[in-house]
Image (cartoon, rainbow, N blue to C red; front, side, top):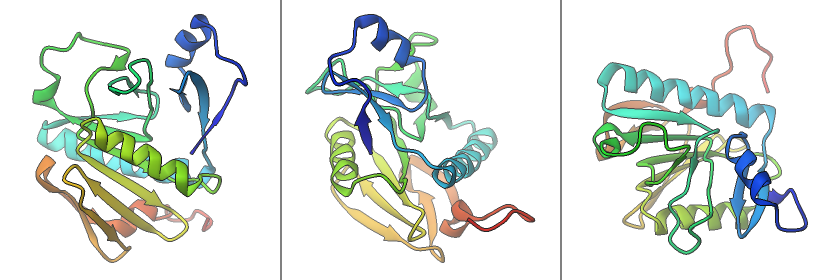
Length: 192
């Protein structure tokens, strides 16, 4: 899921600069690159589109792409993660400074789209980290199998296939689409 950028601890200036870079996280005192691929980036953009459309129609959530980091991990206060897509219910944003740079509260929904170089151990560890720190719903999107594994704050897990509907559950009432829509290739584009 991530790999170290620097073999030694980065300077405060390097960490500050990386806050504003997409695809870089700060974990265990190291700057790490998130694994990406053309396909995982395309799918993340598709999911962002569906969630943004829901946000625009309902006004219930704010949706963010991968450049927004979350700094709300109790076991390592300096840590920040940048999910591929995230969403927070609007009422939870009240009282925050207008543009905190790094989000100090956990997201209601986090989407992580896996890349070919992601390791199962790293993905599992990151998901558990999110859940242990108040993130409510995590969608692990697996392009190779065209599935979505849903992890919930209550510890339950569900695996959805292309023919299944995915919803935002109680966090995003009314959000619903087929899992297959996340993976759809635009008309006229070559298949991945």
